[in-house]
Amino acid sequence: MKIHEVIITTCDKNNKHHIAPMGINIINNEVIIKPFKPSKTLENLKETKCAVINFIDDVRVFAGIVTGIKKEWSLEKVTGSKVMRLKDTNSHFTLQVNTETDDEVRPKISCEIIDRKIYKPFLGFNRAQFSVIEAAVLVSRLGRLPMEKIHKEIEYLKIGLDKTASNIEFEAWSWIEEKINNFEIKNNA
Image (cartoon, rainbow, N blue to C red; front, side):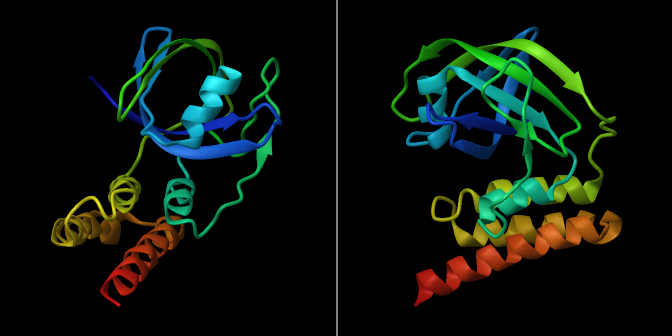
């Protein structure tokens, strides 16, 4: 099943928002979200039964969230939803939770798309953007994957970065490298 890398915004009953990168499945008018346990996204989905899927081409958002280097992203209200969207998103889907299927590791949350908005065209990812997103996924697996595998994949991904990156992708990449270096220093001390 095809996985779309997106940014999910959710909120709790007190309107405290949470922003997370995640892979989702889209089947017709349904979005499948499978967050790992424990997860603030999962807690919020269960509590408020709504979310916003943000399709964004600024890969700094992916890198900034998984590295924790940049934590604040501008949000805007969404008509008809308690959950806000990323201000700079290309487009978004507003979701309503339909069903929850529990699992020890990754529960399956099925959501109906209740609204779709496009703000600017999404022209696809270039190789550098793809490299940053894949590297962000690797960073989210630090401590779960062997460091040798992470370094090997980072080395390969850097080829596409070096050939096609703008300052935006180089900035995001620097956050990824910093996170990996800090993780290794902390765990080798």
